[in-house]
Length: 434
Ligand SMILES: *Cc1c(COP(=O)(O)O)cnc(C)c1O
Image 1: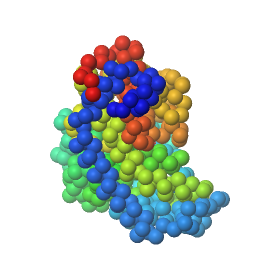
Image 2 (image 1 turned 90 degrees about the vertical axis):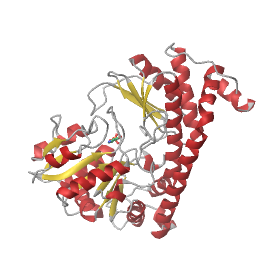
Image 3 (image 1 turned 30 degrees about the horizontal axis):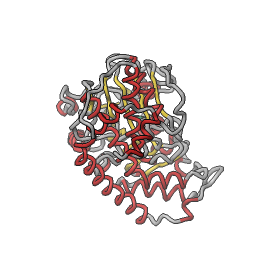
Image 4 (image 1 turned 180 degrees about the vertical axis):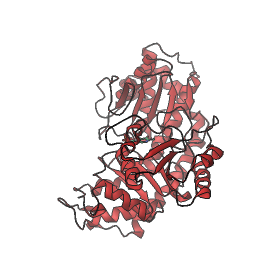
């Protein structure tokens, strides 16, 4: 590393030993990073191809207000998502407030009283427990007479195909699969694994709809679950596909029928996707989707770096330092509330915005335990930007993700280690000077 760059790290408060240790961890990762870049290249071409096929024009970048009838930019953007994800249709809207909202309308729109929802990847993401009614909640699917059943993943992290076949009943109308581990202590599912589960479900009854919670998974592999038979993939625009530029929003891409059903829940029966203004957000949605493959690659590099760094310090990392990635999340088990807090403090210190504030655990709506979140982001709560969060519960695992650029992700990881060092929670190994 040149002395100019080094002096800026020093100025940022990174000690010499932390920096040297970081460099020693990075040196052997070149091939990993090259492979990430190669996938980003493929996905970038895939997205540009979708833009070109759909004839995105300057006129698409202007938006509408009010009812949003005949919103060319909005409608074309949805065609672009559908083209990139190889689906018949898509809903991509600022009216969808977050990933949970997108998932909730995908479910509510496609389930009817008496239907059963079957999760085949175990317990769904925390906020969906209230949507489904696993935790009693006003307005849940349970209140509308939709029953729920789940099949856990096998101890080795694979789908329990036999269990899935057995759990399907004549009432089973929709199967939900969560690609990313979220806050669960399990592996993220690969698109190949998801393909196998979908084949299994469809072999029992082909009319069962399969919805994949695709949060954090977009553009990590060259294929998406929609390429392997999912009827719907659903995600948040303040994660991967928003590319850091979308200030809000969510998407549902899938079959025409599933997307239309979801649209009638997003607005109301009869109106569906016909209304909903894009509110002059089209440029950020288009440009964010355009950037998303390389932004996702930056986040992946940060995750790989963090796993390699913290594993060498004796902390359990999921995925581990060598594993193939299927989402951008890096779980690091720090073993104590102090560890989680110090890590998050460091991530916050490395951020471009609000670097001077100290994150604290709080009772976040939709979550059972207190949660600490570090995010000095341009978009509030955006977790494609450098961020870390974790519930304050044993085994005290922090979930690190994002970084719109690789150097910013690197700074965040180094800063997290610096804070761990300052709190005497780690010992930095001495390395040969690089
Ligand atoms: C982020 C996320 C969601 C949705 O969360 P929001 O905060 O509502 O956007 C759902 N499932 C998984 C796996 C997630 O990571």
